Length: 319
Image (tube, rainbow, N blue to C red; front, top):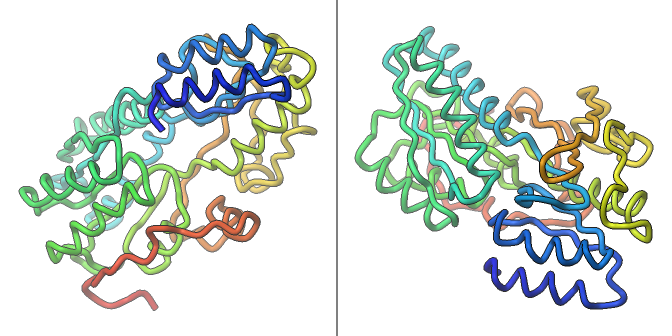
Protein backbone atom coordinates (compact mmCIF):
# COMPACT_ATOMS: atom_id res chain seq x y z
CA UNK A 1 0.00 0.00 0.00
CA UNK A 2 1.49 3.34 -1.05
CA UNK A 3 1.33 6.55 1.02
CA UNK A 4 -1.74 7.91 -0.79
CA UNK A 5 -3.70 4.69 -0.28
CA UNK A 6 -2.65 4.55 3.36
CA UNK A 7 -3.71 8.14 3.92
CA UNK A 8 -7.13 7.39 2.46
CA UNK A 9 -7.42 4.35 4.72
CA UNK A 10 -6.59 6.39 7.83
CA UNK A 11 -9.04 9.10 6.82
CA UNK A 12 -11.75 6.49 6.23
CA UNK A 13 -11.19 4.88 9.63
CA UNK A 14 -11.31 8.27 11.34
CA UNK A 15 -14.86 8.89 10.06
CA UNK A 16 -16.25 5.65 11.49
CA UNK A 17 -18.01 5.99 14.82
CA UNK A 18 -16.77 2.59 16.02
CA UNK A 19 -13.09 3.53 15.58
CA UNK A 20 -11.57 3.72 19.07
CA UNK A 21 -7.96 4.23 17.97
CA UNK A 22 -5.70 3.94 14.93
CA UNK A 23 -2.23 2.40 14.79
CA UNK A 24 0.00 3.04 11.79
CA UNK A 25 3.59 2.57 10.64
CA UNK A 26 4.48 5.42 8.24
CA UNK A 27 6.92 4.83 5.43
CA UNK A 28 6.88 8.53 4.58
CA UNK A 29 6.72 10.49 7.85
CA UNK A 30 5.64 13.80 6.31
CA UNK A 31 3.08 12.41 3.87
CA UNK A 32 1.13 10.61 6.57
CA UNK A 33 1.07 13.48 9.08
CA UNK A 34 -2.07 15.19 7.76
CA UNK A 35 -4.49 12.24 8.21
CA UNK A 36 -2.94 11.48 11.62
CA UNK A 37 -3.56 15.05 12.80
CA UNK A 38 -7.05 15.05 11.32
CA UNK A 39 -7.94 11.89 13.25
CA UNK A 40 -6.52 13.38 16.44
CA UNK A 41 -8.55 16.57 15.88
CA UNK A 42 -11.63 14.33 15.88
CA UNK A 43 -10.59 12.88 19.25
CA UNK A 44 -9.31 9.56 17.88
CA UNK A 45 -5.94 8.61 19.42
CA UNK A 46 -3.31 7.55 16.90
CA UNK A 47 -0.43 5.29 17.85
CA UNK A 48 2.59 5.22 15.57
CA UNK A 49 5.04 2.33 15.51
CA UNK A 50 8.58 2.15 14.15
CA UNK A 51 8.82 5.27 11.94
CA UNK A 52 7.63 8.46 13.70
CA UNK A 53 5.24 10.90 12.07
CA UNK A 54 6.81 14.25 11.27
CA UNK A 55 4.98 16.43 13.82
CA UNK A 56 2.62 14.62 16.16
CA UNK A 57 0.92 11.43 17.29
CA UNK A 58 -0.81 10.40 20.50
CA UNK A 59 2.09 8.07 21.22
CA UNK A 60 4.99 6.68 19.23
CA UNK A 61 6.57 3.33 20.05
CA UNK A 62 9.79 2.96 18.15
CA UNK A 63 13.42 1.99 18.26
CA UNK A 64 16.62 3.94 18.46
CA UNK A 65 17.51 3.20 14.86
CA UNK A 66 20.69 5.26 15.07
CA UNK A 67 21.86 3.12 18.00
CA UNK A 68 20.87 -0.03 16.11
CA UNK A 69 23.20 1.07 13.31
CA UNK A 70 26.00 1.83 15.76
CA UNK A 71 25.57 -1.57 17.39
CA UNK A 72 25.72 -3.23 13.98
CA UNK A 73 28.99 -1.46 13.15
CA UNK A 74 30.53 -2.21 16.54
CA UNK A 75 29.74 -5.91 16.33
CA UNK A 76 31.10 -6.07 12.80
CA UNK A 77 34.39 -4.49 13.88
CA UNK A 78 34.58 -6.87 16.85
CA UNK A 79 34.14 -9.92 14.63
CA UNK A 80 36.77 -8.73 12.17
CA UNK A 81 39.28 -8.01 14.96
CA UNK A 82 38.68 -11.43 16.47
CA UNK A 83 39.30 -13.09 13.11
CA UNK A 84 42.23 -11.07 11.79
CA UNK A 85 43.73 -9.49 14.90
CA UNK A 86 43.56 -6.11 13.19
CA UNK A 87 41.18 -4.14 11.00
CA UNK A 88 43.97 -2.99 8.69
CA UNK A 89 43.06 -3.82 5.09
CA UNK A 90 39.60 -5.22 5.84
CA UNK A 91 36.67 -4.17 3.64
CA UNK A 92 33.07 -3.69 4.77
CA UNK A 93 30.03 -2.79 2.65
CA UNK A 94 26.70 -1.58 4.03
CA UNK A 95 23.57 -1.60 1.87
CA UNK A 96 21.31 1.13 3.24
CA UNK A 97 17.57 1.52 2.71
CA UNK A 98 15.40 4.21 1.15
CA UNK A 99 16.42 7.39 2.97
CA UNK A 100 12.92 8.88 2.87
CA UNK A 101 12.15 6.39 5.63
CA UNK A 102 13.10 7.90 9.00
CA UNK A 103 14.04 4.48 10.38
CA UNK A 104 16.29 3.49 7.47
CA UNK A 105 17.80 6.96 7.39
CA UNK A 106 18.74 6.75 11.06
CA UNK A 107 20.13 3.23 10.69
CA UNK A 108 22.27 4.40 7.80
CA UNK A 109 23.61 7.36 9.78
CA UNK A 110 24.37 5.26 12.83
CA UNK A 111 26.16 2.57 10.81
CA UNK A 112 27.98 5.07 8.59
CA UNK A 113 29.09 7.38 11.39
CA UNK A 114 30.43 4.59 13.58
CA UNK A 115 32.05 2.74 10.68
CA UNK A 116 33.75 5.90 9.42
CA UNK A 117 34.98 6.60 12.94
CA UNK A 118 36.38 3.08 13.21
CA UNK A 119 37.89 3.29 9.72
CA UNK A 120 39.68 6.57 10.46
CA UNK A 121 41.72 4.90 13.21
CA UNK A 122 42.21 1.40 11.89
CA UNK A 123 42.77 1.16 8.14
CA UNK A 124 39.38 -0.47 7.58
CA UNK A 125 37.77 0.33 4.20
CA UNK A 126 34.05 1.15 4.41
CA UNK A 127 31.53 1.46 1.57
CA UNK A 128 28.04 2.88 2.06
CA UNK A 129 25.84 1.73 -0.85
CA UNK A 130 22.17 2.36 -1.61
CA UNK A 131 20.13 -0.80 -1.24
CA UNK A 132 16.70 0.57 -2.11
CA UNK A 133 13.19 0.33 -0.78
CA UNK A 134 12.18 -3.27 -1.50
CA UNK A 135 13.73 -6.75 -1.20
CA UNK A 136 14.06 -6.86 -4.98
CA UNK A 137 15.98 -3.56 -5.05
CA UNK A 138 18.28 -4.73 -2.26
CA UNK A 139 18.95 -7.92 -4.18
CA UNK A 140 19.77 -6.02 -7.37
CA UNK A 141 22.06 -3.62 -5.54
CA UNK A 142 23.88 -6.46 -3.79
CA UNK A 143 24.33 -8.35 -7.06
CA UNK A 144 25.71 -5.31 -8.88
CA UNK A 145 28.11 -4.23 -6.15
CA UNK A 146 29.35 -7.61 -4.95
CA UNK A 147 29.96 -8.85 -8.49
CA UNK A 148 32.49 -6.03 -8.89
CA UNK A 149 33.97 -6.16 -5.39
CA UNK A 150 34.66 -9.74 -4.43
CA UNK A 151 37.34 -9.14 -1.80
CA UNK A 152 34.89 -7.94 0.86
CA UNK A 153 35.23 -9.19 4.46
CA UNK A 154 31.82 -8.23 5.83
CA UNK A 155 28.44 -7.37 4.31
CA UNK A 156 25.91 -5.36 6.34
CA UNK A 157 22.29 -4.65 5.45
CA UNK A 158 19.71 -2.09 6.56
CA UNK A 159 17.12 -4.83 7.14
CA UNK A 160 17.27 -8.58 7.50
CA UNK A 161 14.83 -11.33 6.44
CA UNK A 162 13.71 -10.87 2.84
CA UNK A 163 15.82 -7.72 2.48
CA UNK A 164 18.91 -9.75 3.40
CA UNK A 165 18.04 -12.75 1.26
CA UNK A 166 19.47 -11.16 -1.89
CA UNK A 167 22.83 -10.62 -0.19
CA UNK A 168 23.03 -14.24 0.92
CA UNK A 169 21.94 -15.51 -2.51
CA UNK A 170 24.45 -13.27 -4.28
CA UNK A 171 27.30 -14.57 -2.13
CA UNK A 172 26.13 -18.11 -2.88
CA UNK A 173 25.99 -17.54 -6.66
CA UNK A 174 29.50 -16.10 -6.59
CA UNK A 175 30.88 -19.06 -4.59
CA UNK A 176 31.55 -16.74 -1.64
CA UNK A 177 29.08 -18.21 0.84
CA UNK A 178 31.00 -20.21 3.44
CA UNK A 179 29.90 -21.64 6.75
CA UNK A 180 30.80 -19.62 9.81
CA UNK A 181 34.17 -20.68 11.17
CA UNK A 182 35.67 -21.24 7.72
CA UNK A 183 38.64 -19.02 6.91
CA UNK A 184 36.86 -17.81 3.75
CA UNK A 185 33.63 -16.92 5.56
CA UNK A 186 32.35 -13.40 4.90
CA UNK A 187 30.59 -11.92 7.92
CA UNK A 188 26.95 -11.04 7.33
CA UNK A 189 24.91 -8.80 9.63
CA UNK A 190 21.77 -6.67 9.50
CA UNK A 191 19.18 -4.79 11.52
CA UNK A 192 15.67 -6.05 12.47
CA UNK A 193 15.52 -9.79 13.10
CA UNK A 194 13.13 -12.12 11.27
CA UNK A 195 12.20 -15.77 11.63
CA UNK A 196 14.56 -16.65 8.79
CA UNK A 197 17.46 -14.98 10.62
CA UNK A 198 17.30 -17.51 13.44
CA UNK A 199 17.46 -20.39 10.95
CA UNK A 200 20.24 -18.83 8.89
CA UNK A 201 22.28 -18.06 11.99
CA UNK A 202 21.88 -21.57 13.38
CA UNK A 203 22.92 -23.01 10.02
CA UNK A 204 25.96 -20.75 9.88
CA UNK A 205 25.20 -18.44 6.94
CA UNK A 206 24.87 -15.18 8.88
CA UNK A 207 26.53 -13.87 12.01
CA UNK A 208 24.76 -11.10 13.90
CA UNK A 209 21.51 -9.13 13.91
CA UNK A 210 20.93 -5.78 15.60
CA UNK A 211 17.51 -6.75 16.92
CA UNK A 212 14.36 -4.66 16.85
CA UNK A 213 11.27 -6.25 18.33
CA UNK A 214 8.02 -5.54 16.41
CA UNK A 215 6.14 -8.01 18.60
CA UNK A 216 7.07 -5.75 21.50
CA UNK A 217 6.33 -2.41 19.87
CA UNK A 218 2.97 -3.50 18.51
CA UNK A 219 1.81 -4.84 21.86
CA UNK A 220 3.25 -1.90 23.77
CA UNK A 221 1.49 0.60 21.49
CA UNK A 222 -1.84 -1.18 21.98
CA UNK A 223 -1.33 -1.36 25.75
CA UNK A 224 -0.49 2.35 26.07
CA UNK A 225 -3.43 3.45 23.95
CA UNK A 226 -5.79 1.15 25.82
CA UNK A 227 -4.64 2.31 29.26
CA UNK A 228 -4.28 6.03 28.71
CA UNK A 229 -5.89 7.21 25.48
CA UNK A 230 -8.96 5.29 24.29
CA UNK A 231 -11.99 7.16 25.56
CA UNK A 232 -9.78 9.76 27.22
CA UNK A 233 -8.47 11.86 24.34
CA UNK A 234 -5.92 12.02 21.56
CA UNK A 235 -3.44 14.54 23.00
CA UNK A 236 -1.64 15.00 26.33
CA UNK A 237 -2.84 11.70 27.77
CA UNK A 238 0.35 9.59 27.76
CA UNK A 239 2.39 9.82 31.02
CA UNK A 240 5.68 11.38 29.93
CA UNK A 241 8.57 10.71 32.31
CA UNK A 242 7.22 7.37 33.56
CA UNK A 243 8.26 3.82 32.73
CA UNK A 244 4.62 2.62 32.76
CA UNK A 245 6.00 -0.79 33.77
CA UNK A 246 2.62 -1.99 35.05
CA UNK A 247 1.21 -1.47 31.57
CA UNK A 248 4.19 -2.41 29.41
CA UNK A 249 5.39 -5.40 31.47
CA UNK A 250 8.93 -5.58 30.07
CA UNK A 251 9.43 -9.15 31.29
CA UNK A 252 7.32 -10.30 28.33
CA UNK A 253 10.17 -9.48 25.97
CA UNK A 254 13.85 -10.39 25.74
CA UNK A 255 14.97 -6.83 26.39
CA UNK A 256 12.97 -6.67 29.62
CA UNK A 257 13.74 -8.88 32.60
CA UNK A 258 16.76 -10.47 30.93
CA UNK A 259 18.49 -7.21 30.00
CA UNK A 260 17.17 -5.11 32.90
CA UNK A 261 15.78 -2.36 30.68
CA UNK A 262 12.92 -0.10 31.80
CA UNK A 263 12.95 2.96 29.50
CA UNK A 264 10.90 6.02 30.37
CA UNK A 265 8.32 7.56 28.07
CA UNK A 266 9.94 10.75 26.78
CA UNK A 267 8.63 13.93 25.18
CA UNK A 268 9.82 14.55 21.61
CA UNK A 269 9.07 17.04 18.86
CA UNK A 270 6.43 14.63 17.57
CA UNK A 271 4.84 13.77 20.94
CA UNK A 272 5.32 11.11 23.63
CA UNK A 273 7.65 8.30 22.66
CA UNK A 274 8.60 4.96 24.18
CA UNK A 275 11.88 3.61 22.84
CA UNK A 276 12.14 -0.17 22.72
CA UNK A 277 15.74 -1.22 23.55
CA UNK A 278 17.83 -2.86 20.87
CA UNK A 279 20.49 -5.54 21.29
CA UNK A 280 22.60 -7.97 19.28
CA UNK A 281 21.47 -11.50 18.51
CA UNK A 282 24.47 -13.68 17.74
CA UNK A 283 25.52 -17.33 18.07
CA UNK A 284 26.09 -16.73 21.79
CA UNK A 285 22.39 -16.07 22.52
CA UNK A 286 20.42 -17.21 19.46
CA UNK A 287 18.99 -20.18 21.40
CA UNK A 288 17.08 -17.93 23.82
CA UNK A 289 13.36 -18.56 23.32
CA UNK A 290 12.46 -14.90 24.07
CA UNK A 291 13.83 -13.45 20.83
CA UNK A 292 10.92 -11.90 18.98
CA UNK A 293 11.14 -14.19 15.91
CA UNK A 294 10.69 -17.17 18.22
CA UNK A 295 7.79 -15.50 20.04
CA UNK A 296 6.23 -14.71 16.67
CA UNK A 297 6.43 -18.36 15.74
CA UNK A 298 5.38 -19.89 19.07
CA UNK A 299 2.76 -17.34 20.19
CA UNK A 300 1.42 -15.98 16.92
CA UNK A 301 1.92 -18.94 14.59
CA UNK A 302 3.90 -16.88 12.10
CA UNK A 303 5.94 -18.63 9.43
CA UNK A 304 8.96 -17.37 7.53
CA UNK A 305 8.63 -16.72 3.83
CA UNK A 306 12.37 -16.61 3.21
CA UNK A 307 13.97 -19.19 5.51
CA UNK A 308 14.11 -22.01 2.95
CA UNK A 309 16.47 -20.50 0.40
CA UNK A 310 18.16 -22.95 -1.93
CA UNK A 311 21.76 -22.37 -0.85
CA UNK A 312 24.98 -24.34 -1.16
CA UNK A 313 27.48 -22.97 1.40
CA UNK A 314 31.04 -24.15 1.15
CA UNK A 315 33.24 -25.57 3.89
CA UNK A 316 32.18 -27.72 6.81
CA UNK A 317 28.68 -27.26 8.26
CA UNK A 318 28.42 -26.22 11.89
CA UNK A 319 28.38 -29.22 14.21
